[in-house]
Image 1 (cartoon, rainbow, N blue to C red):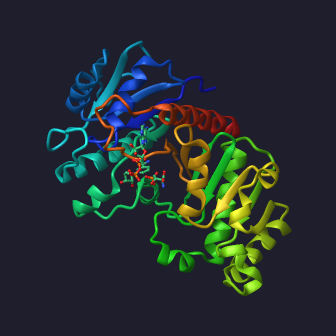
Image 2 (tube, rainbow, N blue to C red; image 1 turned 30 degrees about the vertical axis):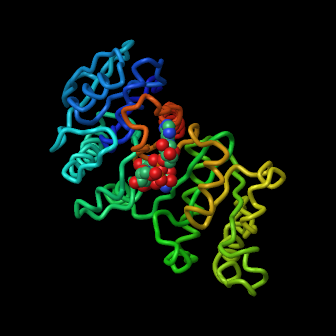
Amino acid sequence: MITEPRLLLTVGEPSGIGPDICLQLASHALPAGVLLIGDLHCLRRRALTLGLSLRLEPWQEGDPWPAPENSVLHVLDVPLAQPCRPGHLDVANAPAVLATLDKAMHLLRAGAADALVTAPVHKGIINDAGIPFTGHTEYLADACGRPEVVMLLAGRGLRVALATTHLPLSKVAAAITREGLERTLRILHRALREDFALLAPRILVAGLNPHAGEGGHLGHEEQDIIAPVIAVLRGEGLRVSGPWPADTLFTPRLLEDADAVLAMYHDQGLPVLKYHAFGEAVNITLGLPIVRTSVDHGTALDVAGTGRAEGGSLLRALDVAAEIVRNRHAVAR
Ligand SMILES: NC(=O)c1ccc[n+]([C@@H]2O[C@H](COP(=O)([O-])OP(=O)(O)OC[C@H]3O[C@@H](n4cnc5c(N)ncnc54)[C@H](O)[C@@H]3O)[C@@H](O)[C@H]2O)c1
Ligand SMILES: N[C@H](C(=O)O)[C@H](O)COP(=O)(O)O
């Protein structure tokens, strides 16, 4: 039985709060052994800026997994091209940010770690560097050869999954197909069972249009796509219901009988989740062969290096990653 999962933690965008919240971990009792992946020099400078007293130890592939120690963090060094300055993005550092993810994937594939936790990256600066990138979710899906994954954010008892992720609103409707939606619901259902140990998960599915299409007068996706998929899955005994009008779906009476909500697009579901649990929620990628969790917030350039970054979501992301590793291990036995 795995007692202490080995967690990789990528530091994310170096000019954002990723380094700040990673460094804060040195003063916490962690749920698992954690290895940071990022620029060691940047982390040392940020610790000085923040007045944090801790030791940062270099770790290299082949070294034994670092034992947890008070006020000590271990770092696999992935050097940046330019020195990092809190709050100031530098396009030259974008390749190194992605290199931390590639390193993590390499270690996971080699069986040298059990899960990946990611601090936030800045999607815009990576694109400005000429590298097409929409998010960790899609990048890791691609790296794992699993194009169909599902983004789930969970916090304070609410779980919200998305049928589409980082897509312009103008492309959302066309991206919702019967095949895609059915696959998404199957991935969500399986993950709720295996990763969250819910034996018969109940899923509420949102409509796409106002009032779930108002009987076809405000859109047809509910009748043509969403309802037929729900009918197929219900026919197999899955506890899936909807399409529910999204404006009243997130009300206590409905949520009390649900384990997760499937929203049709990013800003239909995530504002509710973040209003409910920002700072304590966790982003989990379902359907990958690896375990990957992340924070519920972005790079917060405005607070990087100021001492005002809050690390609660990162602590939860580490907890949830460790819990999923243990649950998957139990299922495999
Ligand atoms: N997991 C990820 O990699 C991830 C997640 C969300 C957003 N992003 C990226 O982050 C960048 C900035 O996004 P944004 O400005 O929309 O959102 P943001 O979460 O970075 O910031 C929104 C507001 O919340 C504050 N804030 C966020 N997290 C905080 C924390 N831990 N402690 C204190 N204050 C905090 C910020 O200061 C800001 O005022 C974008 O490029 C976005 O794509 C990345
Ligand atoms: N959609 C996420 C959020 O709003 O919190 C975020 O952009 C992170 O996505 P990735 O995990 O794909 O980077």
